Length: 138
Image (cartoon, rainbow, N blue to C red; front, top):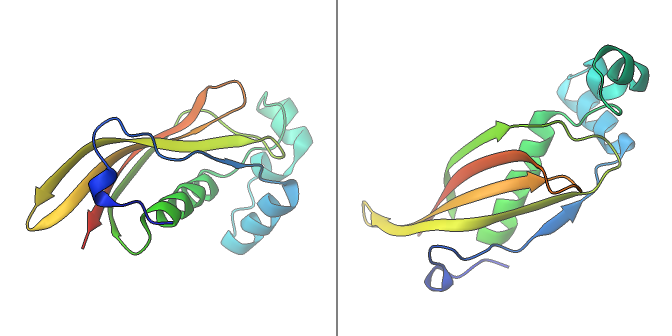
């Protein structure tokens, strides 16, 4: 469902979504992208060598989740900016919450624009990815 521009203003919360990337999904993603780092695929390496609770989800996979999220809520409207800061690792088979908030609406070069703060949170409420996006409405 595409969000209507006229309903958006500073402070409007975007709908939240929950995802639980499975080990099988991460393995398939790593195989498809050629990203075979042991921190993504090897539980022992992740725990013993990196001090993580398990193998982590690649940052570009989490970026894909945020891109899908934006496309689901803004449909055919153009994503003109997507900037992300990966702050913490997320591990396989653990639910993450994706959400965001409108930070500004304005006109630029004859286009209606929406600026957003977007994020991924882990179950403890820690923000693992923080980002910003801009959407141009036609």
